[in-house]
Structure formats: C-alpha cells, structure tokens
Length: 125
Image 1 (cartoon, rainbow, N blue to C red):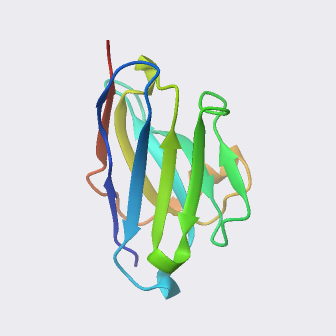
Image 2: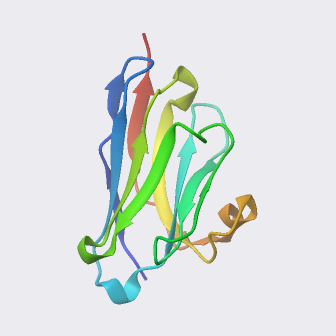
C-alpha cells in the first residue's frame, strides 16, 4: 500500500502555470506507475496523465497534450505535473494515484488503492 500526498494547487488566471507535486510517503520499493486525475465540479473524475515506474513511458489526455508535462524523481519518491497555458476547463481537484499500467488511455481504468484529498486547481479570470 502506497500513501500519496498531492500539493501545489492554487488559483491562477488563464494562461498561467502551476506545478503539482505528488509525494509518496513510503520507500521506493512501493513506487509504481502513477496517474494524475482530476474532477471538475459536477463532473466525473477523468484521467489526465500518467507516467511509468521508470519514468520512460508517459501518456496524456488529448485535452492537456502539449500543455502539461508529467515527470518523476524516484530518488525523492516524487511525481510532478507541470501545467502550462491553463484554461478555465482545467479547474478541478487533482489527484495522483497508483496505476497497474501506463500504456495508453485505457491505463486510467487500472487505478487501485484509496484516493487522497487531492489538490485544488482553479483557473479563472
């Protein structure tokens, strides 16, 4: 079981940037594929991006491709989501969670474990 804590959210204007951080509280032995999800008000949770255990493979949802970059530093047990050119549609609570796979969009359905509190991102003018 891996405990993950999200941080870095905030209120920004359209076009601005944020970097979200996801820290694993356990050792690297518990490290795995990680996905970022978000849930906008009144909408279902959706997959945003994922990164493989090694960091070699990544995936992005179409609505963030070219704007967001996912990365990880396994030595620090930390994952990042660099979000550029933010839009109001990016507003929501962002979560990181373990995935069994990070191969394509289907991987977002392979999440397991409990969900944390997430970090709130609000993009508004």
